[in-house]
Image (tube, rainbow, N blue to C red):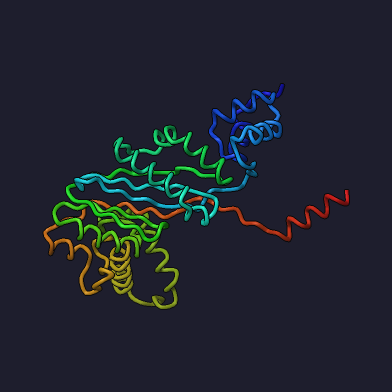
Length: 289
């Protein structure tokens, strides 16, 4: 019997989309033979089809749900392997039930939700033959909240002190369109400013050559000021009325923007790049051996 290592369990999970414990049980029953474990799992109906390692679930949907009292909200990402599945009712139902549970149980982390929804996830994978994963979630609490979904790919929740839900939603729509890095200019790190300064000096090397140091400093300061405005939500021109900044829009309504959360499907997930020509060449080479 082969040793049931963590690496072996991980490989089986990647190939089947099943939970760690189910994979470990299947490997133990199969004496550590991963191919037999997959066959046994398929035969038992636990999975519809074996997934190959590398079938990354990088598509899916973002969900946003605000509580009835408008004091708390949850934003969540659930991944699938294809965009097609993300549009199907079975997947949508799984997402809706998951976010309802997260909001009701006041969850601020995906880990307990992943555990409690594992049986439903396994059933969905078995039915659709595609990997599905709850990836992440955030819980937001504030005096006033507004959520916005752009299709099922981008979701935003904005928290305000003062103002109303409609204002928060308008600002959330702006965030979805511009994806600012920071809320306030003061939150921009010194490292980010230094990088921007370096890029500016490199790109404008010929233009600033021979100019007095004080002139160069003014040029750099102007670029940094523009960078802070572009990167900070409160300083950005409001998309619906570029003559006013988002911060000024909130202030006029007697509100202060406390925070925002921006989710985009697949952010940070490395997607494999298929090369059909290389795959065919490898198969031909193997057949000649």
